[in-house]
Length: 208
Ligand SMILES: C[S@@+](CC[C@H](N)C(=O)[O-])C[C@H]1O[C@@H](n2cnc3c(N)ncnc32)[C@H](O)[C@@H]1O
Image 1 (cartoon, rainbow, N blue to C red):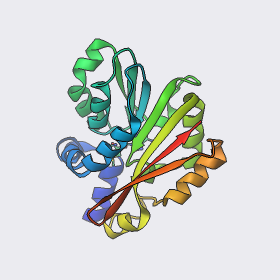
Image 2: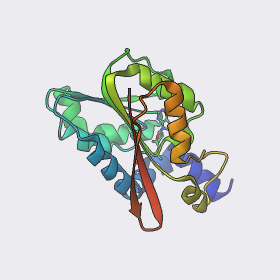
Image 3: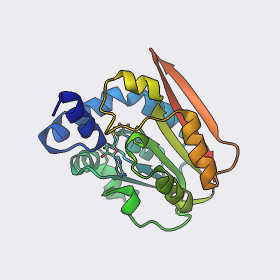
Image 4: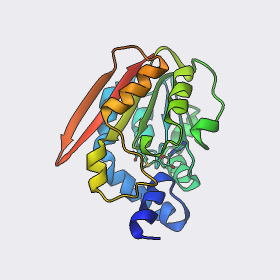
């Protein structure tokens, strides 16, 4: 297996010693700009009930939790190495009873209808094997007027990174807006962007 292919698989679902000790640093440093950008747009309120999908080492979950008082934050990741890392970082909030960090595939976990005010996900959409199904599930578990925040980098920039096309699916903001509209999200879908060197990063915000 080429390194590009190995690294792409690790990015999709970190595993083993590399996943446990190396990938958290890649995510913490390499993804911090986009996570900070999404965090600002999230405008967390102290009573919010928020779900993060594919939370990796749990840095965004941690930033959100610092703002939460009577609300609740759940995060889910299907890499056990990432869940362990995130649980360590967020242990005080888990103890306090305002955070839950679960291992599993979002598509397979049972959530109640209308459970969350906000659902966010950063740098995960590239790996969704059934994007329409996933977005429909998010729609169902958001409360009426709940909002979805999707952070990602645009397709041609990702392609320049020489990642494995069999692992990464590339999207433009238009592709994602189309999926959201098909699902029934309201027409006012916002596409926020930030330029970071030669890269454009996006946060799409859709309201139920
Ligand atoms: C590239 S990392 C991004 C991590 C973090 N969001 C960030 O921006 O640093 C993608 C993460 O999403 C997780 N992931 C991808 N698809 C998932 C799914 N369907 N359910 C749960 N976790 C998923 C992977 O295990 C991995 O930790």
